[in-house]
Every structure is written in C-alpha cells, then in structure tokens.
Image (cartoon, rainbow, N blue to C red; front, side, top):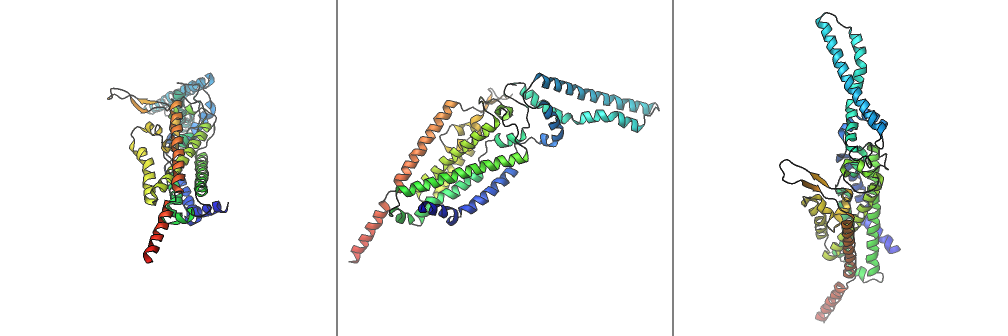
Length: 390
C-alpha cells in the first residue's frame, strides 16, 4: 500500500500531475465555450416565441398537435392579409382625404402585428414538425440545442487526449531516462508487483478523469441550454435521423461516456506499451499521438475511424449510434455516402479485436518491464572493470 501511495505522490506531485489536471480541466471548460457550435442560433434569437409554441406541442406528434399547428399557421397567414388590407385602406384614405387617426390605426394593427411577430418562432416549430412527421413513432418535439451540443458531434476531446499523454507517458519513461528502473526492478517489491501497480494507477486516473470530463460537459450544457426530456428517443435529433438504435437521449449520453472511458483506457495502455518499448519520452509522445491524430485528421471518410481496432473510434463515441447518411448531388453520378452506420456485428468484432490487442500489449509490457537484462549487463560491466583494475 505504501508503494502504491508513493506512485500516486510521484505522479501528482513530482511529475506535476495535479497542475496538469487543473490546467487541462480549465482548458476543457474554455474549449466548450469556444467550440460550442452545436446550437441553432435561430432558436436562441427567437427563443421566447419558440418556447411558447414548444410548450403547446412538446412530446410525441398527435392529432391535436397537428390541428394546433394548422390553426396557428392559418392565424399568422390571416394576420398578414388583414394587416396588409388595413394599411392599404389607410393609404387609400390619405389619397381620398379620409385620413384614419394614427391612434385608431395603431389600435387596429397591434393584434395583427403581435401575431406576425411570433412567426419566426412558429417557423422553427414547424420545421421540427416537418422532420418529425416523417417518422413520428421515434421523433419528438423538444428543445434540441442542449442535446445537439452534447451529442451531435464527433470531435476528439483534445484536452483529455493531451492530459493522458502528460500524465501517463512519464510513469515509465522517467524511470528509464533517470536509470531508476535498475534500482526498482532489483528490489524485493519490484518486478510484476510494481508494473501492475502502475497499470492500476493509470486505469484509476483515466477512469476518474473520464468521468470528470463527462460531468463537466453535461453540467456546462445543462447550465447553458438545459438538458430536459432526456427520456425522448435519440432520433429526435436530426443528427441521428436514420439511427436504428432504440435508446433515449440520456441513455445515449451514458453509453457515449462509457465508450469514451473504454477508449481512454485502451489509449493509456498504448502509451504505457510504447513507453516501455522505446524508453524515451519524446518517442512515446510522438508515436502515441500519431496513432490517434493521423487517422483522425487523415481519413476523409469519417465512418472508417470506427471500423479500425484502435482507441480512436471509442474516444469519439457518438458515431456508433448514427445511421447511414447519404446525400444526392446533381453533379454526382451516384449518391454520396457521407456516413455508413456501424452495425452490431461490426461493433462486437471491433471491440473484441481491440480488447485482444490491449491484453496482448499488457502481457508484453509486463514481460519487458521485468526483464533483468539491463541489470545483468550492468553487473557484467562492473565485473569487467574490476578485472581490468586487477
């Protein structure tokens, strides 16, 4: 237990892990503010009118909802016609010297103007209605900005990505570069026990940080937009319009968070594996970063990222719940596949392959870490020096 506490102290104090965590959490919050582009600015601009209509139709599409929308559409159209006729009569009166008092004009026009002012908010609800009526069984009316910002993107969490690199890479590399591995591995409590403690410490840190970052995201968007109606189907968001998954919005967030945790754990194993193989911090950072960022930025077809047995797909998460997205173009001979859904069989194969790779890396790590060849070489070198002196 004392050794484990020492490893914790070494990571958080000697290697400045606590400062890195504080800095990257602040950077995470800042990135949420700066990169918050998942919201529809129209909803925010006409939020009051939009929410007024949303309260009337919220939830599943019903006959009453459709009747209300038709009636409201008719009222707005009628108000436009009546207001136009009113102003036409007013200007006709000017021409024929039968001027209507301005007070009377304002009084007559005010109800029509108030009705027309709500048109933008109504149009937003009507746009949702046009989307929902295509598949009313699993598409509900709700305020989408919060859930879109939380789920409707496949953006790599760079603060978390770099935080893992900064925390985990030095765990082994610092020992190799300072030659402390020779002393540690020659102790009674070295060998397998030490490497397992380091792996468990890394897994514990990754788990806590992943949960913390997910909580930060949820809290921020709940405060910024609100995340009500989490029990509504995931298809209520247009981003998941063709998804075949039967789950709620909150359920999707929980599963995405779980997938990200799994991806981060696999990534931490990759970092440790590379650090033990290379024994160099710079090489570890370069190789580990390349393994994630090259496919992330290099693959033009985004869905391929989810088919690779790499941590990247799970670190993104949301794509596993999307359906096919195919767009037609006038210039294109065939429809363009922008995203292809990952079916359950493919998901299981990818997960099993990745687990197998991770377990293999862990076994190789343990074997290489407890290799005493460096010690034997040091001992042989010392004996050779002693012989030469004699």
